[in-house]
Amino acid sequence: MDASNPGYSGGELNWYSSTLGYGGTYNYSHGAGGWGSSYEALGGGWVICGGEITATAIWFDDGNAPFDPPPYVVIKEHSRAESKFIGGTGAEGHAANGLNHTEERTSTTAKSEGDKYTLKSNPGASVTIKCTPTADASANYDPFAEVRYEVTLYPIDIVLAGTGRNGDDDVALVGQKIVATLNRGGLSLSGDTTGVWSVAGSYPFAGFPVHAPNGDTASVTAYTQGGTATAPTECFFRDSGTANFACGFHIGGTINQTLVISKQLTVDTPTITGTETIGTVKNKSVDTGQGSTLRLGLFDAAPIMLPASGQDDTGPWWGIRWSNKLSVPSYQKVSGLSGRWHWVQTFTPKRYKTQSGVNYHYDINDLFGLDTSYAMWPRPGGVPPQSFDVTNFFYVYGDGPNTTLLDQIGDTKHRTGKEEFQTYVMFLPPDRGLGRTWVPIKKIEWYWQGETVFSGGSWGSPTNPDKGKTVAGTPIAHPTWIRIIDIAVAEWIED
Image (cartoon, rainbow, N blue to C red; front, top):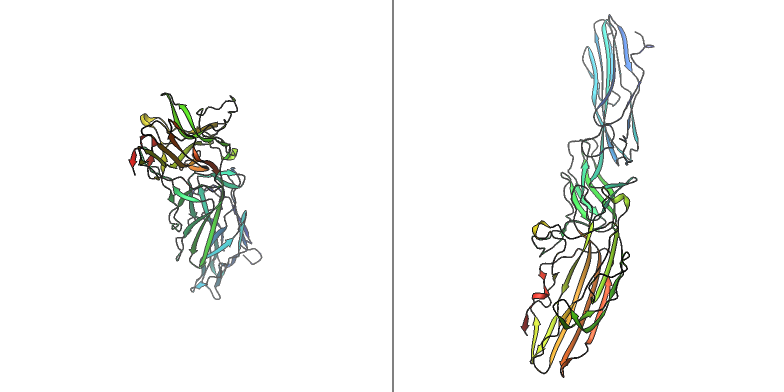
């Protein structure tokens, strides 16, 4: 064989990928793709195996929604060129693997073999790698020349689980658990570091535990920044916006570079519409089903009409009323479900009286806690928590804090009420399979105060009456408490 008729003069190495096991379905080819050629001239002569090999790896789309290629890819090339030359004066051979590895020679062989690692940023939809290995031999007895070339691509990326898709974007609702994993595509090099996580934007948190069995305590577990990427990191979010998962780590070996990669997540909060009305501090005779009694309190907020019936179905004398309707974007629904919602209320009671010249106060005065019950907690007998479906559900509710004016002992009596409330609209998103928790999406801060004196056989009009309401801005912190306060069982204590 002569030089005008080589064993090969170039070749194409093209392949698509299969799904990786790390949870992604879009990836570059993972594992080795090979292209090689050899030639042996039987009986003696001269052979050459050489040329340019082009390897093209395609970002694979399995038919689901488009997905961005990773920010980095590590390219591993393995190339071997080898020749054998036996017998005869002038027998010789050469080998160059195209990756600049040293040729190793004996009296009858030449070989060049080794790996090359390359870090490529922003690789795009395809990666093309070229190599030109060459081997040649001349001998009186069966000269042999061979090249083999393999390429492995390792995508370097953050993979998010528990998300949905909106076009090319990863999306989630507040309260859905998100799990982030650092994917190196199986790459492991000497000098690698494990990486450190950070999460920014949209107020990440780790949990909202409510104590069983009656919800008497609730707290927020903070998300801890800086966890190592040997394990996935997970959290919830409580505000809309763009959340950013980032991980800094070092790739060892001949690459020897420190990288910080990130993945963005669009977090949505349900759209909430509604209104609030607040009444007047006054003395009012109220019938609660056990007879009519005179009370000092917040009464007669303007009705809020339900769209369907045109009626307000809250208490007839309530001093504050509110209405809410929620909706989520269609791309955030899970199997057609939009989630659940309810109210939670915390407050600080302050009530006083003077009777027969002695001053008294409630034993729960100035204590902060949950108002009576935690509505979303499972109820006795296996009854599910009470909550409302987000889809097309408009609801009106309210409250009417007051203190009874029954005691008429002594010539002069004095009653005072002064209380502050925080009413939260809580949202529970549909479950994407990894977990979910309640998050606040609206907060109404309101209060009332008033005092009255019993003199001359009747209670006078309230003095220093005041009331007010404010809708808090976002973001809204979770409600927390360490006790349940039930004012119906409070006791008077002498000052």
